[in-house]
Length: 425
Image 1 (spheres, rainbow, N blue to C red):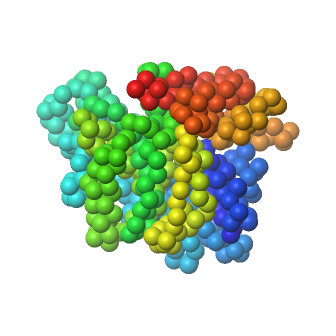
Image 2 (image 1 turned 30 degrees about the vertical axis):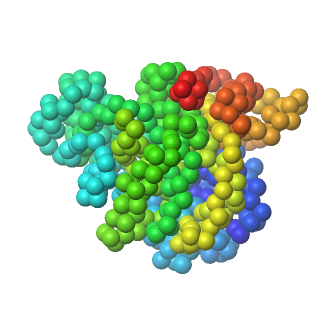
Image 3 (image 1 turned 180 degrees about the horizontal axis):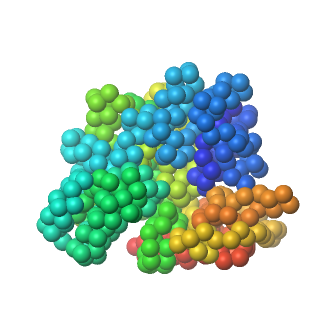
């Protein structure tokens, strides 16, 4: 099987790692990939969807996996399927679950999926009125795609009004913020749950927990994610059951009834409040960095999971996971998330003394480029993820941070407490 992975981050690198060790995969391509994915397969400098489809036809690509949300919202799946190509991901219509927060919130309301009280509006006056009915903190969200940064948690009514005004004026997020969602803040603990769907059936992956804030103890600004671990002990069978019955099944049935069956990754952002799962948001692709922990936990071939979902055949798939834990620590550049940093050479110490460590820890590269000298340089905000596997969360965490200690580049920064909520239970 020849496989194309679309995207350039740590998420796509980790999917590539899982496919690289898959005996069913013969040739692996990335479009565009990053400076390290060329160690796993071949990078393509093609961005046009039609040209990518041409490449797939000419090179007998059996499966395309779309990593990021933007190509999905822009309709790459529709184009590939019109050409008779097998592709994993939702149609542009179904991708509205992430592409428009207003569409998503209204869909949840239509199908009685539990979510926070909200208003969707393009009127500053209406936004102000609703803000004054809520207790602070208050959540203000831009409607469109903002690279994971379009959510403001305002600590006061005045701050919420300011955020709403800046979004609706176009100052904060341009056209993505000209309609907004204002909603109540839910006080609980947050989870990331992923369901691989084929339009009819689904497979739920081990629940993960992301760490969005830049600094230890969840302090500092929100980021794209500073680390994650899976599975989390904060989810029990009762929560999984409620998610099945109240969230996933009605969502898949609702999408099908509305003429846009959902195929791909349904990423469910969950807040558990007093034991009840409330839906914060949907995304239509893997989370990053959660994907970096989930892929190494997958025991069955990755190609089977993606191909059977893409071809509507999950009911005939046998998907298994290792009985282990994974912890991933994001290493970021010096000025992340405030501004770009100067490129810095990455040096990874050779591990010669510990075979177990070598087998149970690895790097998923993200914001890196390979220069003419053949060396890797940190060029992105989130540079790489150090992933550790273990029989316990503590063991996985220890291995992840041991690997962090092996990686060097100017200005490196990371949190030192990833998985702290599980370890403090």
